[in-house]
Length: 114
Length: 115
Image 1 (cartoon, rainbow over the protein chains, first blue to last red):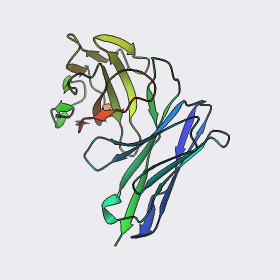
Image 2 (cartoon, rainbow over the protein chains, first blue to last red; image 1 turned 60 degrees about the vertical axis):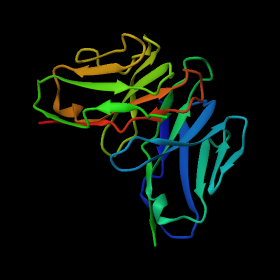
Image 3 (spheres, rainbow over the protein chains, first blue to last red; image 1 turned 45 degrees about the vertical axis):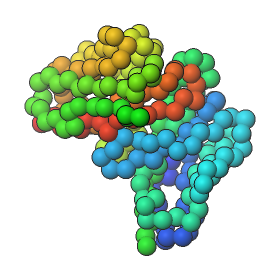
Image 4 (cartoon, chains in turn purple, blue; image 1 turned 180 degrees about the vertical axis):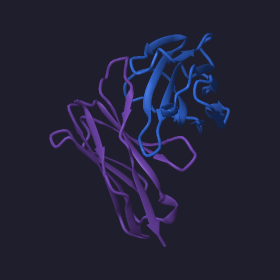
């Protein structure tokens, strides 16, 4: 069956360090993979999208990698700050047709300590 | 640019009662989604509309859930009758189109508690 797995445990890191979050999937052939941030009591907010033919994407302190052989995406936040504390969700679009829709993982909660 | 609007923000009902949620997407967004998010889990798609037509409702429990988007703009999601396991946050999202890789814009959700 199809499965999306993110870090099962919450991630606690010290301010200034790099946070690395993982998203593994099985029985999917995603054309796109997206990362969202969700704060308590709020809806998810889009951060980055990476296509199946892209290996890496960057935006400011964020970097996403996508390895379709390993069926894994890594999400990095460099020089982390307490304001980066949130839950991060990966989402897969399993088709590149007009019926595309995003299937979400359960998220990883990141806490950055000052 | 105004974001996705949802109401109410919170709702507490007893099991077997009915409840309705409202969503107004970003202006010009053709595609509207309703997601259910249970505590500790990721959002799960209930229904996707393209304009006023249903694209995917395969995971909508149709015996108790219904949704409509009559004029292709705002949408209503209804639960009747509610069960305890329906306690969750109901998120509405919109996107420009239904093509793959579309960025989703979410509202803040309606937190439903069924007692």
